[in-house]
Image (cartoon, rainbow, N blue to C red; front, side, top):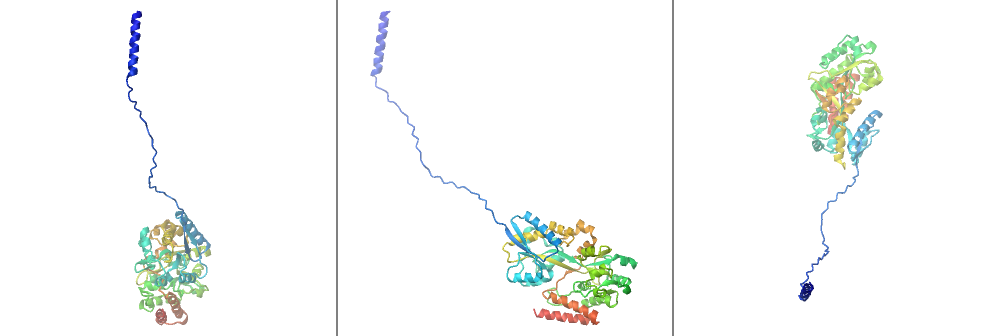
Length: 441
């Protein structure tokens, strides 16, 4: 046993010796080196920055109306401010002589962006080139000329160019006193009446002793031309370069009109102590008068007990005829923000705004579609005035010498009434004076 153990020890010693004497194997060392390198990287980044823009300011002017109408306009302007918060409207009503104020501002290039323009003044403003065309704006907004009553849109259109959007209007209706018709045992007038019906009714109703006359025939250029149109005539040529006031059609119409007074079945307001036939009608002195929608609120306020109706003016030998009185919103060519100014015009004349005006009772809308409104269906007097703008209606405008034309028409009628002058001679004098005014332009 000892011998074996000795042998094992010897073997172990030899083994360790051999291991110790062998050459060492090379040691492999792996070194991980981390190097930081700065690299310039270019990256395109889109930065969106909200920049607050200042609202643009649009100036709007018109003549000063009564407080109720002003409040109505301001209510519509408030709605505009909500719909267009980036457009501020500065309303600048003009008191006093509106036309003089606007003319002065236009002459100095300081007129408002948007302002009222009466049809009577339109020809001169177009001739002077101080109105901006609206066709392109209308097209961009989807507004069509056919959206509006033709006689009104045509009134502010020259050579196919639209220079104004009609804001409201009036035409003439024949107002009749129901009580006076009942007393005379006559049927009420209808839209089918003719000149003959008018004459017969006026003769039967007239009671001179009690200061009652069948029909009012003032020496008024705002009433008489309707009879010229109904007789197939015109006051002026289409381009306003010539007057037709002494034409056979105009003279015959004047003879029919003045015969009411000459034969005492009609009268002028002064014959019953009044300055306006609307008052004479309200008091029961006139059974029938040609007046506009302005008479409706007047009768409601001043003569609430009167019972009356309204129909279209009776047709003459050439058919129906009427006059339209209208005002447009126009755009200054000097506006610094014409697109915003157009948005204002478009909003003021859109269907919603015009419905608001109609239901207020202050004015009639110019959009065709509102002829079917519930308001007009329930207000026959206003409906008659609205419908008067269609068949045979012509705008109350006679060109750049319009004031001379109106003045001469009034004088011609007065010469017949007060001086017993022959109708043809009187209207010839009027026509000559108008031609002189045209030549002096």
